[in-house]
Each structure stands twice: as structure tokens, then as C-alpha cells.
Length: 139
Image (cartoon, rainbow, N blue to C red; front, side, top):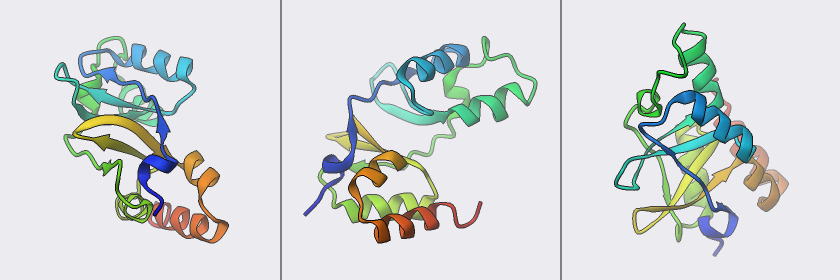
């Protein structure tokens, strides 16, 4: 059985829920990623913010990214998968929630992230096409 841990990208970094969005954007640039988990002082994941969130929900809405905190862009809903879950469970979560990045947890701690690039690297073409088609189906 292939698990979420087998296809995830390990070593994910979090942005603090109290950090401003300009700092989050700089982290994204330095890490060459389009999304960051938002973690609380308890080191638990509170949500995920994307580069698109920063642009659309902050800058384009007329807000100052040096004043808006990462926690303000999280909605309290977090979809994740257990590290030992079957990869099909991870794909189902991504499809049903139409998300492109899925946090992978082990004992309620973030251990990795599954992104579209991970899917491309690990899935057969047919399964990849079906999964991506479902993620983008209603946009």
C-alpha cells in the first residue's frame, strides 16, 4: 500500500499565526512555495494561506500586508490526512475539497505536504488526470 507519507514533501515550514502577510510572502519566495501552513503558539496547524490569498484577500481588497496577520486569512477549516493513510484517501480528500495542497499529519503534528507536484511525481498518468480533473472541476 502506498501511503500519504510515501508521496508527501517532508520538511514543511509554518508561518506563525501572528506573523504579518508580508513576512509570509517573503517566506514563500525564499522557500519557493505557493502556500504555507499557519501554526499557532502550540505548534498546531490552524490553516493554510496561499500566495493567491495574500493577493486577492489582502492586497486587492485594499488591506496592508504589513498589518494583516496570517491568522486573519485562515477560516478555521483544515483538511488534512494522516501520514499512514492510503494515498487514495489523500486523493479523495483533495478531490472532494478541491484543494491543491494537503497537509500530512502524524500524531497531530505536521510532517509534510502533498502538492500537485508530488502527485505528478508519484501517480500514474490516468490517476493523475482523474485527480486533477476533479480538483479543478468546479472552478
